[in-house]
Length: 172
Length: 330
Image (cartoon, each protein chain N blue to C red):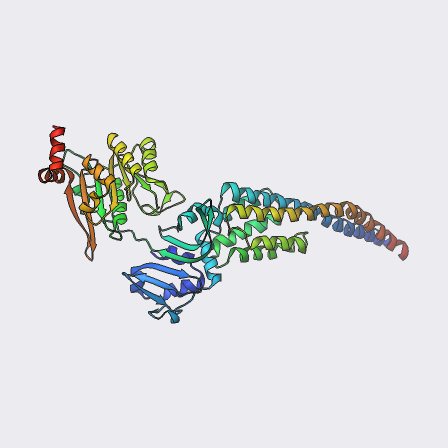
């Protein structure tokens, strides 16, 4: 009886691990899509709306989910509140604080950090170019992420369950 | 008064300004910040360099040198982290911040088709502290009204630069708009081409220009006057530094609509103002009923009011040309 209970537990745990791994692939491509969407919004606000950056950041955060929206709202808040940070520092700080909670990787982080060095501080034509460049880079990451998702998400799901069953068989 | 300015300064410069003596703080006129060059302030018509401890010195080598980092932060704060939204301001070469202070900027210009499109690599800032002198027009105001039956008269204010024309104009707008003292409040419209009179920040005046005042900000004077005539039905239009042909056309138009105009012009005295053809024509046409010559000294504003009617009369008697014109007229 106890053995059976233990076996079920192991299988459940293995399945859960598999699903969590699979979810990280799915989340990554989803978050990349949201990020691209937010940057598009930011580009529109900056280029056509000529909205001031803190407001533009807040507007871009609408319609995307946590934790990514936090990147924009937090930067805007830092800019409004503390007058000691430069835009670049505020952006950097916000990235660091949310990064652990995202499924994104170092490459995306580099793209965002690079964008942060120029955000706001040139004419709108230049801003547009930088934002489009960042979107382009993120887009290629996203395509890759979708491919990986197809390839690995299902694999991890079955691998978790199957691995757990293997352990159970070995233990019996 | 300085809080809006201190607010935008980076930490190091902020503490330097705080350490300035109270006397200097009260009379501060300009703070000049140049990247990697001595920090300078102007007050009461003289200038000094400032050390890191907030002491004023005349030797530039002892002065504090603002760094590139600080200049970048300053620029970010002036523009609210949005340089792209300031293209128009950059083209004009200055940005108005809350409190009505104007920050002149210098750097490398970007040209497009031979015209300046903007400034990049900004390395010099001139923070000009604006001061509101409420009551500056107190003595002048009653004299701008004609007899008891007549209302406000169209007036041209003449003075050399730096004598307080804009300050006076701003206070006139405020006083006319508030009314009080047996005068009823007037609908005032200001055309503020250089954002100096009302110092609007995003369309809202930084200075108190009165409750019944509409401001057309950063608008060419002639066009602005016409727009206000059509849209805001003003009783008096206030405008700074007239002198071009279009301005004269707009002022004539206003006079035809029965709208009074209070305008200023750069000149040392009436004779010099008459030397400018557009202004002379306007005066001869009696678009203005009186002219005010303005001087500033320690006690405040000094002014001399000249009635256009009387002045033209005298001119007629003394000059043959005018007497012929009179004959032709009668």
